[in-house]
Length: 119
Image 1: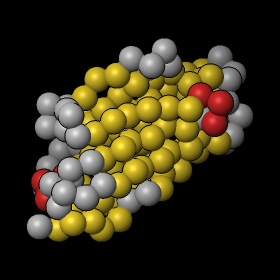
Image 2 (image 1 turned 180 degrees about the horizontal axis):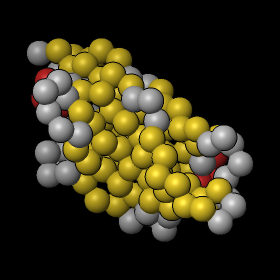
Image 3 (image 1 turned 90 degrees about the vertical axis):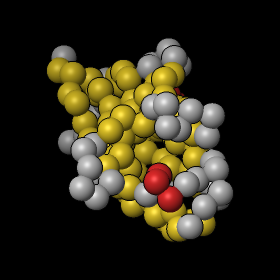
């Protein structure tokens, strides 16, 4: 069974930094695009950043210049470096990945990790 496990969330003051990690485990034949989403209380889940298997990235306008997504294909892991954090970045952050298991491509989600930015 394939799993995505996030880590690195927590409480930080405005202006601070956090680094989120998300590792895929299980029988994996390949991983395509990996991404981070977030959901704040009372709001819809939104895309924060995504990275393709080739390393191309794109970001939500609200995080451009502050967040950096990267991946280590050898470790089946995606990272999100978050700098200059703002209170409005407070949300549950979810990892998402397109994971190939045998001949099936699955849209996999992690359980989420809480990020809280205090003012």
